[in-house]
Amino acid sequence: MNETACELCGQDGGEVVYRQADFRVVLVEDKHYPGFCRVIWNEHVSEMTDLTPPQRSSLMQAVCKVEAAIREVMQPDKVNLAALGNMTPHLHWHVIPRYREDLHFPSPIWAQTQRWPVPADIAARRALLPALRAAIARHFSTQA
Image (tube, rainbow, N blue to C red; front, top):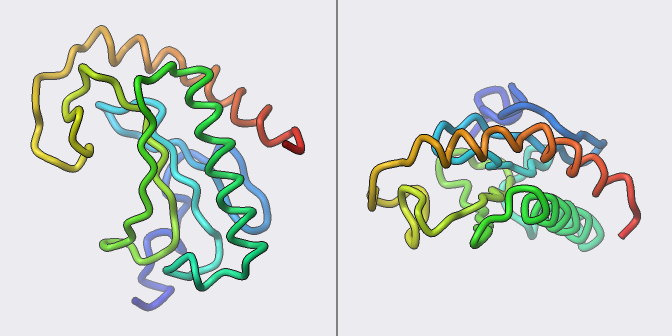
């Protein structure tokens, strides 16, 4: 895929909640999965092995910081991490809070729906998004 046609080269891919030279963290607007984030490598590469070992380490540390913030604020039953890139071959990690009663649990969110959404649960999780934004900023402001 040509970089000019790449969705993640041409736009942020969500609400940017943290940015640095190598990557950005975005909050994805997903009506069923509030708190769904992506960590997107800014340069157009498609595989982890396209990065140098220090770059890989930096990216995975970022993924772990986002996961930690999600666990702290959203209190999910599980966090799913995925780097697929089949449809958008631009390196990015999905960091998705999961709950036993969500639409797809225990399957991936891209699988067939298992149950109907509970609007009150989704609304309660959406209400946590300001705290999640703050937690992500805080996790990136520390060295660990």
